[in-house]
Image 1 (spheres, rainbow, N blue to C red):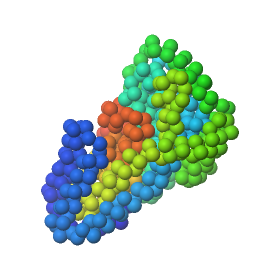
Image 2 (image 1 turned 45 degrees about the vertical axis):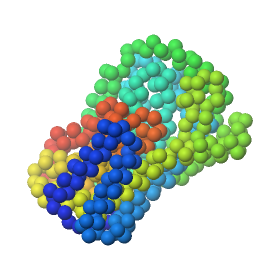
Image 3 (image 1 turned 30 degrees about the vertical axis):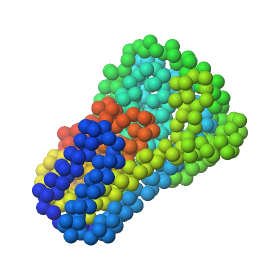
Image 4 (image 1 turned 180 degrees about the horizontal axis):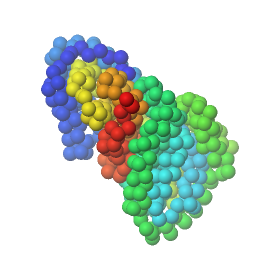
Length: 456
């Protein structure tokens, strides 16, 4: 949790006013003016600094709050650097091209979106990381969708849905461990309990993706051209699968994500050197600028030209701004006031669960950070659930159902910015098709109360 004490205590009406003002501003700029999220977030920072100064909060206190907010995301920022390197190294080593080529051999036009969702979900559970799943298998699937002339928005929605199903259900997931730890619930009891809402959401989502999948895609003939170009690129080799195997092994033995991504990237880099004509100078340049495809088929070149540290700088700059913005919301007392008001007025099980979901969603929207949505909401509602006779498992489930899965649906959030950048599909385009993420909070609010009460 951000260690920021509020320096002002606004009234609830005042806090809600600034909440609506800022959300309205951000929404207008992103949806109405189609501006990059950096601009409205920066304007929001200007407004909160002016508000804080007006309320006699010193500039140093405001600045310290912005710095503390940004510091809370440094772990994610370092991972973003590594994921940029991972994508470029997996490209030049042939790992992602091999995945795409293999996918073309097993996926046809029938049930395409359903298969993308199911496969991504399985791999998401295996890896335990929605972002890693999206940056590896997701990139391969989005490339296949382009080749098949399928909807990139629906494909991205299926990828996001599957990746965040895995993020919720995997015992290796950071958010799953965090949600169970913050509330004090055994990890596997937590996973068993969230399956009561997660499995129905998964089944409904799978049915929806199957129903909207094209029955037959006449453009499948063009896949031959893609496969021939991929083979002619000289990237695909039997050694190309090793970086993926290394990453899976590291995940299974619970190696830290930073180390696992580093090892897999280094292995991929070494394989690229021994299986291709690329010099060390070129390969290290790929780490920063990303790999550029050089085949005779331009669509495949576009597909392979990805990755690198440079590709992550847009994401990293927005994360820093968004988390600094969140720090100002704390120091000015806007978020603490809203959370305290929720805490005081809740009594019934369904209203408590609905308020938990609304708070987790609100923190995601305001701050853009899923870990903080889990931490803040969990700490706020612990005593509320205890007084109302609700189980701890109900709270940890609500945190995941409305905290973890909502982050990728916010255009200025950590996950939203990253996914839009990696898949090259705007958040607002794939949002209507991220069925699993949309269904999870609805199901937990409608049916969560039935399994939330302690036995008398």
